[in-house]
Length: 317
Length: 296
Image 1 (cartoon, rainbow over the protein chains, first blue to last red):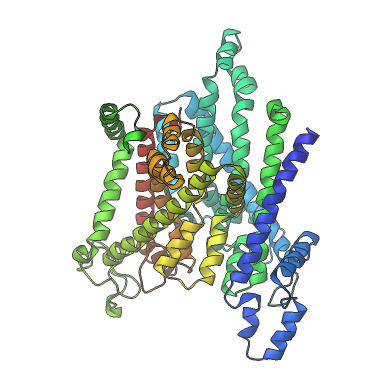
Image 2: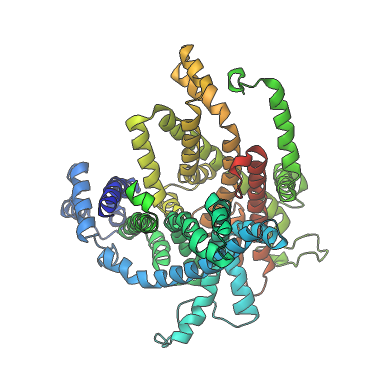
């Protein structure tokens, strides 16, 4: 197991390097380079710009800059924001709990509903329920998230007045858990819709693949009961591709969270990113690109380790 | 397909093609997708002829007309008195153009990289596939927005950016097909005949992956239309006064509680389009390659 983890860790190294090279390249692709925001400021003279350039090390050759920057990334020095000069990593981590609360709730809900629909659909393939579920999933996958969000706001917040239309809590109610949950309902529903559709499709096909294997027939011939066959034999095997899916779908989850946070004014990382985009806060933009990229690498690593824990063939093979 | 590519001869190919059509038409949702996509393409193509008004003409004395009210504006007017139906039709042109150009970019980039990696093998394959893995680590919307904010927005730039951030799955599909194909006899034969590398890649291998490419391309149009609406909605895509379904929604958001139909209509068009292409792609997959069905 340890050697598998070591091997898998080594495979992540080129990915990390790739992610950092692309992140670094993007920053230098920015019009005017990393100093663009200062050149727009009339109170800053060209001497100031030269000084900032030397302070930031931008007078050095590109590869030296890259290594310095990459070393900073790994030691937690992600640079400072243009406006306010706060440490970028700090600003991002500050927004992390809100986003993870949103993504975690939506993901759990979506997996619960999606997997149930998928398993039922696989067991009763081509039944009316299965047909409705598969075409329903396709329709859900075609919804633009933000439009579904706007419709949800219109119906549940404006029309019915049941739920708040945005934000994370009412002013002065920061510690009120009920208030937080009420604010969480709509964004979670919107973000979960597409994930539910994806999970129901994959669970269905993953279970269908397993249900027709020889060992399932053997289990039935042995006289095992239906729920035993499903839980002990089908589930672990069907689970593997689904755990992998968890890692694969992480980038899409971040994208979905960004859109959802923008519609609902949810104070998370996606919202931070969109705001930074408007203010040309390059350090935050690059920090977010790097953060999501590295998070996805780690997520996939954990997913693979989880798969190896379930399946001896993976860790020994 | 080239003659070498169909080892079984021409006759079975005809039979297979008939089977494809039969499998496709048996699929009601695929047919629905096909009809929807055809109608949308036709309406976009003939938008200047169908549209009752100039989509950019504004008349502030005719703001917020209600749809179906016999006012001369079949689907009403928006906050600047522009005809909603005309804007939807012209917006469809924009959205479909972006979708198609992005899809072409995706397919070209993806097949070039997949073909090269799969056919060359060795360290080229390793490097290219690590690049694919790296690109897949970034959330597409994040990458898109950053690049879209750096590049002056135009229809072509938006389409290219969408295409260049979504080719990775195509590259993987193409590579895995090539890995399987390149061991087959007809490729060995072509090599023995002294065919050049480029000839084998583009004339022997590429035509044989047309089916999975067509499926991937159809589904890519759907995702490109969706992604275009996201970035236009966020203000970094198609710029006003040019109408796209995404930026129509941005405008409509401000009048949401009083005139909801302004937001309902463009969103419904996006959903319909994306759904049409998704169902079409799914149907094509079932028809062209029964092996690839979701429910094997």
